[in-house]
Image (cartoon, rainbow, N blue to C red; front, top):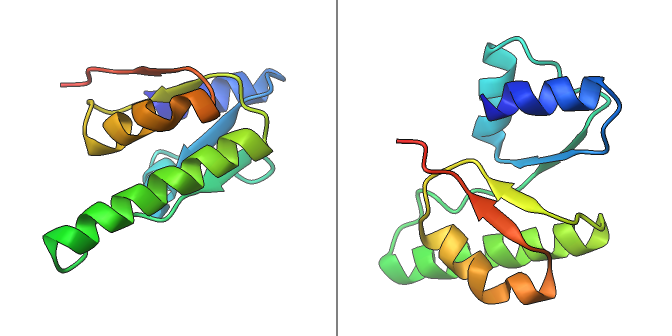
Length: 107
């Protein structure tokens, strides 16, 4: 539903960005949503790393990349279209350096 909302709002001239993973892009394409010409930012996924420590480090790198993207693009609000988890917790710790955010409870 968030991909469709993004597509609708972008199609009606709203200045909206989509920050997603490569898997998110594939999901959009499977829904028939065209992302070409839209403000889409693909963030590296931290899933599938080998050790617990490398998982934590990869999650922190992902959040730092997210903060950099938010600041560079001057995004004023970030909405996580996922249940709260490690990434939203880490972002909350750093959000004062980026922008306010909200989180969905999708389950």
